[in-house]
Every structure is written in C-alpha cells, then in structure tokens.
Image (cartoon, rainbow, N blue to C red):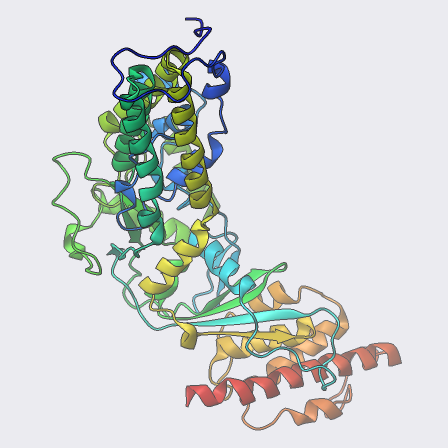
Length: 524
C-alpha cells in the first residue's frame, strides 16, 4: 500500500492532531530499517544474567527480525529451521555467550595430566587475572633483572561446590531502567489512540507484545553451573594455566575445586517439559546430587575419563557422535537444560510477523502516529545500547567467583622482570611449602615455561631443582661457579655462557626471596 499524500485529521480523534495537514509522511522502508538489530540481539543476551530482567521487555524495539533469526535456532522445529536457515548452534549457553570460549593450556602437576586447551571458565579466569593489577610489582633497580616482564597469579580454591549449583543472580539497575522504554511505548500508544491513529497504535502494541513475550520466554532459563565429581582418592588438583600472552595462573586446591575451572561450565536450565524432575531449588541451595545425575552415568563417566586423560581422540569421537545425532546433546546437561521448542518457535514467528506487519501498517498511519512509532524505536534503541554495553564476561566471572567463594584474600598477583624469575616463583607456589620437594611431575612445568634445551638452561634447571625442597637461604646461587663441587664430564661453559647462567640464577634467587617475603608469611 502506498503512503498517503497528506496527513488528514481523524474524525473520531479525542484530541486535535498537532501534525494534521502535513504534506509528507515517513518512508516505510526507512522506518522498517531504523537503527539496527545488533544492539537488540546483544541486549537480549543479558536476559538470563540479572534478576527480574525477563520482565522488562514489554516495549517496541527495533531489530525484531534479527532477534528472531538469532534465537529462533533454539526451537528444535522444522518450521523454524526453514525460516531461519544457516546451521547455527541450538545450544542456549552458546547463543547467550555462557560457553564457547577456548581457555589456555593447563598442567596438573600432581596427577601429571595435561589439557592442551580448556574451556570457557578457564578463559574467564585468565581474563580476570590479566585485568588485575599486581599486588607486588617488580622492584625496579633491585637484584632481579628486567628484560621481559611477566606475571604470576595465585588462586587458592578452598571451597568445593556441589556438582550442580544454581547461583543467585544479582539485582541490576537495568531492570529498573526498563521502565523508560516501556513507559515510552505505553505513552506512544496512548498518544496514537488519542488522535485515533489505530494503524500506528496497533504497530506499537504488536511490537510491545512480541518483544515482551520473547524476553520472558528466553529469560525463563535458570543460570546453572555444573562440574564433574573427581574419582575417590584423586590427588590434589594443583596446577597452572599457561598463556605466553597473559602470564601464568597457578591454581591450588582440591581436585573437585580445580575441576570447576578446567571442566566445569555454565548452562541455562529451562522447565521445558513435564518430564523435568521438579523445579529448580531456591537460590544459593545446591540440589541433591542423587537427583542431578545424568541419564546415562556410564556414558558420562567415559566422557569424564577421556577428558581427564587429555584424550583428543575421545573428544573428536564425541563431536562426530553429536553431529550424527539429530537432536541436541543433552548427555551432560542438567535436568531441564533445554528450552521449550514450541514457546521459542512461537516467539520467533511472532517477532517475524511484527517485522512484516509494521512494514504494512506504519505507512497507513498519520504523521503524528509515525513520529510516535519512531520515537519508541529511538528510546528502545538507547536502552538496548545500554544493555549491550554491559560486559557479560565480567558478570559471569563474578558469578563464578561467588560459586567458588573466591575473594580478594584468595587471589594474589605478582609481577617479575624476567620469565625466568616468574617461572621459578610459579614452581615455588605449586610447591607450597618451600622446604618440601616439587611434585613428581614438575618437569613438565619447566618444559612448558622454559622450553629451551641449551646446555645453559639444562644446567640452570638442574641447579634450581636441586635447591627446591631444601631449607635455608638460596644465597649461594649468587656465588655459584660452574663445576664447583663436582666434576664436569663435558667441556666447561664459555665466559659468555657462564655469565648468562649466573644472571639466570640471580633471577631464581630473587624469585625465591620474594616468595619467602610476601607469600610464606601469609600461610602462617
């Protein structure tokens, strides 16, 4: 339908149209493409991170088709797959940014396990460590040299959470600010009704209803944390995350606590069907582990064992098996972990219908009603932009730290002037007590942090390893002379190599001294 040439007054209007008689209208294609849908999609991704957020979507928003296309993939129905093709993921945690990041390499020094890459939660911890300011920056002008500054962040995990935890969501002011776009949409509806512009009135009301339903249905997922229970008798999970771009994060604690970072993940648990075993427990209350086991414990145990061993072939096989399945992977999801396909599909179709109907209805309205419609989109766009600016990773990190009871007292970050000093300090932190020897699998830590195979580095590791586990000071490292106290079978070092070895040993001494000064006293 072509837009009218002139805005005429409506006979049944309750008030006089202030724009009656205007000789132009807003172009329908311009209204349909007003602003963009990216901010609406990103704003919708916050709907499961804050309390009451799902109730604040009753406003007319731009980008309804983009929202339908993004989140309509959650509806495991042929109609929605036909409407929104593209082969996207149907995992809610992926779509809402709760999973999908690749974490750094992890070395478990006491069990000897090595993970070439970890998951989303480990990536969050590394990001948190990278953004922290060091409690103890490198001392400029001290004994320690400064060539390539590096950092060590030490996390002491003292709490082992339940296998499934429903974290308590925080009250965020975004839910309160939603009053602004909701009020603007309601006011615009009232204004359109007063001038009897029922076309614009219907368009705004349809947008409010469609977005409100989508926000409520998508936001009905309960943020859920799950990790694997370690085998009985498993050693402590002490280890380190290694990233040559972000430094090293040393993690100390029980295997169950460290598992939370290496193999735990976030889910969205939906009450999608009557088969769901009960409703989620109240906030801050862990469910009964007996009620939260997977449907196939044997299969889950095989997957856990394969991941614990770092078996890449097992993971590839699991991925191939998932691709061959027509349905979602629910083997490792908690009860109720998938959304209601019918509700998601209905909301997606409603959002698509909103997009199409508004293209047809808005040109039929008077100019005042069209201005009201565009005003609601402008206010909603501003609110969506604000929601998009909220860093979801910061929120997830705060939730994870709350689950692990990880506060400032359990996190310490140290800066060093050389990678050598940092590596020595990291090994001392893994060692815990400086008078005890390193764990049996400490060699893989040295190889990961200092992979050089030259004779100087080999000698340095030999000397420092010999000092580990010895009581007393390491001051004799400052006076170390190659070949002293032992016969050397190979040719002696050149003066340059000898000088390099002495400098590296000074770095190790400086790291040991700092460890005794700033860390051992805290352990009491």
